[in-house]
Image 1 (cartoon, rainbow, N blue to C red):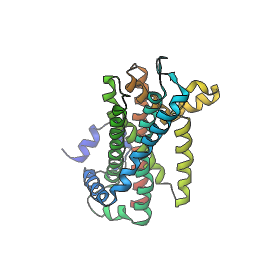
Image 2: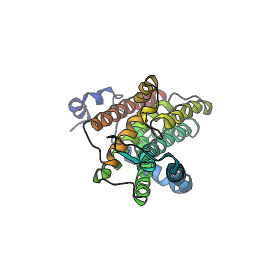
Image 3: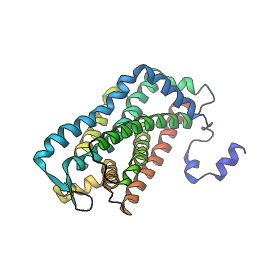
Length: 275
């Protein structure tokens, strides 16, 4: 079937992508990223330990002072069981955002890697999907490692927790797509202060460490808009076995966020590199 035929039958979102910019070779960039990471495996692995340290220090240490907190259905759960899903969501977010912002900016502005790639059969959509896919792999590996740590601490008490890994992959994909799209607007390394300005408050306020009820109503509304809040609630529901239709709403949030991010990132790469 011709590419034109595929595009006519594809969903509407496909028609939002730059015309003729997808060659179906995004796996080549994924393989290139995996090969390059062999030389930087220590930096790759270091991102796994940050949420583990938070879990040990706050869950096991501070948790003895805090006591139990209400879970998703109001049933009291230990402080460690409360913050662990939040740290799992933050782990997926951090792995994806780091790869799709700092690394992409270096390749885009300094190494000029994408200019060389676009001299091959790869198109801007291949580059966007390849980079987002690698960020997804990184975020997914962090999530898998953190789930193993949670299991070791006895914090996974429901079979629904098995779905936390694919949910973390969807979360990582959405953050990676939006992160790459935002990076295409960056002009210098100083602009990355804005990334920290967004990520850090979101990590602290998105019910990662405290229930939503501790905030005044106006701040609750702000928190409910943030993507990490929906990731935390999704993970907390799955790891505690409190599953309901509300989780589909959180999931839909990230499907829309990921689709918007992919389209925007592909169109920006097309504008930056081919026009």
